[in-house]
Image (cartoon, rainbow, N blue to C red; front, side, top):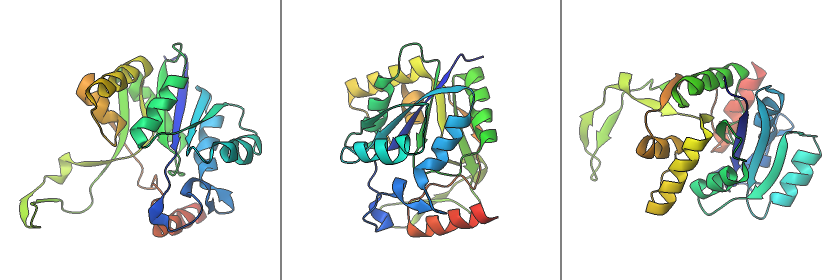
Length: 229
């Protein structure tokens, strides 16, 4: 069993596709900032003892004052500025955690509908395999296309999954993967890709179709509908 689970929440994105002056993490979803939903889950989950929020450099003070302090999140250790890309932001968060960290969960701040049951399943799998990520099966036919837009081949959708967050890893191993990626300037939009490249296998746990990431105004409407169910 893990002694602790610590969390890095990536909340530094600007969310240009939302077409809003307010960054998506702070937009209201049923009268609550989107970021609060995932913070609530981690704050209430017993295994979590520390949270690092990585915010946009211009918004660290706002996040600290208007989210963390205003709503009394005791487990949030720091709000720190993010980097140019998501990978830079997550790396900044990882370096804030102590060497006594056993497992780390990396989560998107704009993914508000995380459940306790999914978090528990991921932690259990990470304890067994060292790394666990949530994936959902494709519902539609998937095809590879070439640069001209013609079909190259049809994929077997039973072996393809859409990946979500949180992604949970043994902290020391994910830290090592990030160090090696920095040395080689290897880039990916997915933390598991670094783990796969430098450390080893990653276990996929069935995700939740409701665990969507708020990227467009339509996603916000869908999330509101799901919360009303």
